[in-house]
Length: 210
Ligand SMILES: [Mg+2]
Image (cartoon, rainbow, N blue to C red; front, side, top):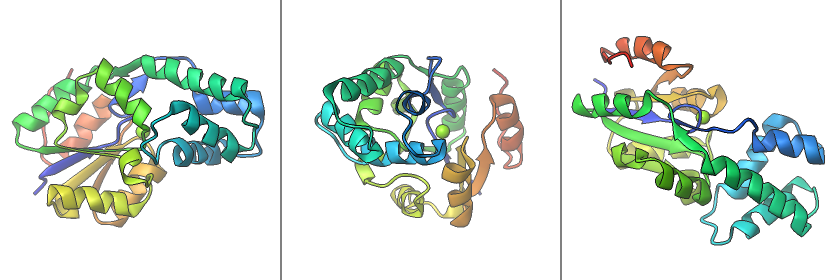
C-alpha cells in the first residue's frame, strides 16, 4: 500500500519563468571544457550542497570549480543570472490542486530536491508550496545531491516508510527515477500532468483533471 508520495521540485512542481538556463549561459559565455551534463553536476556540487551565508562566496566557488576565473564581473554576472531566474519562480497549474487532493486522500508528501539555500528562499517568498510538504529534504541541508542513494534512504527514514510504500516522481531519469528504483521505491517519470494522472492510476490513485 502506498503511504508516501515524494516529488522532485524543479520541472516537476516548480519552474523559473525565464527563457534561459544558467548552465547554458555559462557554456555559451565561458566555454568551460565540460559537457552540459557534467556542468549541471558541478553547479549543483558547488552551490547546492552547503548552507552558504554569502551568495557571492557560493558563486565564487562555482567559478573556481569551473575554472572560468573568479573576477568580480564573472561572479556577479552568474549571481545576477541566477537571482533573476529565481525571482521568476512559479508553480505549475497542477501543483497545488494535486497536492491538496493527495493530502485529502491521506498520503504524506515528500520533497527531494537539488537546490541551494538561495533557490529555496525565493521559492518560499514566491509560493506557498512548502506548506503542503510533510517531509522536505534539500541538498543544501544534507551536503549531498541526487542521485546519491543515501538521500532517498534518508527521506524514507524521516518519513518512517518502506521503499515499496513510496512513489518517487521526477522529470530526470538519472537523478530521480534510477536511484529510487535501485532502492526499491515505486517510480513515475514526470512529463506532464495528463500523463501523471494516468500513471497514478496504476497505484489506485485517482486525481481530478485540472
Ligand atoms: Mg527536476
